[in-house]
Length: 166
Image 1 (cartoon, rainbow, N blue to C red):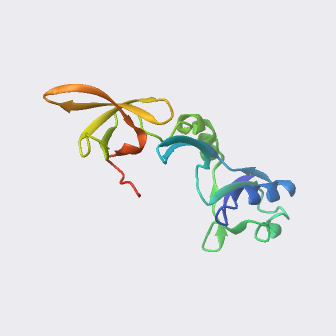
Image 2: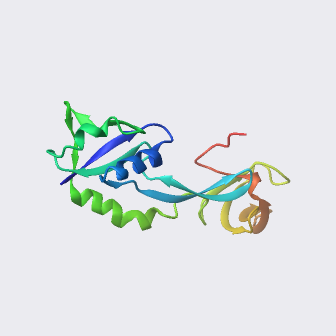
């Protein structure tokens, strides 16, 4: 059997997975826990590793192929030149083996460059050190020719690589 990618409708990956599993189709829908900062608070959320896609394991001669496109939540089988694109077993196995490595993706990491958006240090660049509870962070700033450790609200931080959308 070979793995194939299915594209699912927006926000219907779990629905598509449930309906495929009800048809006794072997599926793989990898998810990781992602930590994000929303409204100044850290939240963890389980999100798909490949948004919009899940994987099924079928033989080319399996009669289940006819049911795939009409399964609730499924848009299409990913194909090239009207032929379903197979994914080797070792690639899927590698993804399964690597899920632990990406499980802690998201959030701000120690040593990451941040910028302060609010308060007395507004506009100053800092280096994130650690979280201090759910709503505060400890950062390292250069102030008066010295490295200073400061506690600030998480809502006052944004990473240098992204911009805030307030």
